[in-house]
Length: 583
Image (cartoon, rainbow, N blue to C red):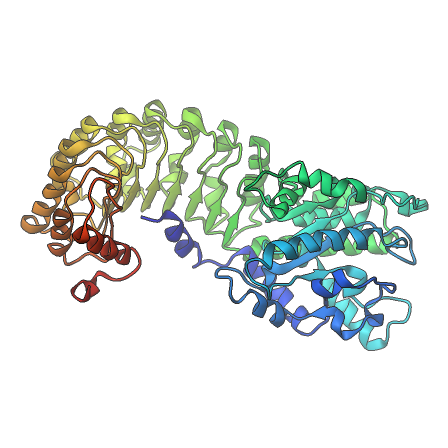
């Protein structure tokens, strides 16, 4: 039962941040209003001129060429191989007088080529470098001036696109060149670079923004990276660890951004200030207004960051939002308290992922049942939840509305890798029977919890909606499996991987399939103590409804019959079981 596949199929229904950005960027890149430098050309040439109109045609790569280079890498596309450079112009007439930025970019690009070309020699990168990618003054023709203005309307989406990597050069060069006047201001004191930084934090994950300023000068670059290496840690991975920005606060609302840039330096003064304010506002509103799926994974967000984000939702900036992912941050009690019904009132939210956050019992108890039970899917795996938190949540739900189960829209609930124990299972029974898909992997459930769940099932007078149940990595034993068989028989998908089941339990599944009409379509029983291949084959053959079956090799059993079965089972993981007769 591959949860990742399930998740990808779920949120592929939704308009994502990438979709919003690509709607803007694709026509700009296809028309060459914005041009991308070919990384392979860039590393091999010493650029003396930095204006786009002065560069040869072979200096550039098209979007279709990037797509072709990525075509042999499943799951990768052209935008994954675009790099947007954010750096400080060191002189009003020349962005890189001593070629310091060029040399740094060339060195890092070589690392990227060495890493990726091991997988696919055709891979190259398209580099957005403003002076080389946009037509420059002085000397723009009327047509070039019009194309420049069009490019400005979409330029921030290059930094905002979740698949595009941003390289920030945040430090001054080590060559000894000293900028003066406005050009002596630091990276975060400059209006354009601050704007580029701000939009880069809108939706990107922690590995898509690199601060090249952390690499130091020429002499220390390789040493800095080599110190990070070990035999299984390639040089490019060392670069990622050294330069990945990682920790990012939720970005400013447009009104707060406007206030911050009032005190920043712009080479063109007030005109550029008003321009970036308008561009940021348009980009922010477009992204959040149109995106149906937002993901902020592993950004080290605190409760305060989470509350700031919830405030954005409550103000209606993400009115079409349907799926929200906030996994692996530091969200806790105060964030949970802020997540009230006003969020639902101002969004179309249906799916919420909070896995990997330290919510704890208090945080889960503070979550409003009016929010959680009005959603269709909730993922709270590995959030530090125990039976006390389950009891507090249920108590609060009853206090809020004694008929909360009748009002619930919840279809999918994932609570794996928490310390629920048998007591937590007992407390949650009313909710577990009222949803269609429940994931309870590694929650400390034992034979006692199985008995409790079975008894509740046999006693309930409510319609049981449960169809897919995952109990992997719990110590259920054969007796626990047997006690749950009446419930199992009404399921479509059943996960019993590594639950301490032997051939006795497997024979119970066979009997249920033969006599009780079990019609499992997906069955997962790997990691158990089932040694007889004939038993496994019988289970498969007597369950014609199976579409997916997973059983892993038992090292205690060898021989041609086992090998044949193992080949079949590997086949079952990826294809329809209707082909069983052909095996």
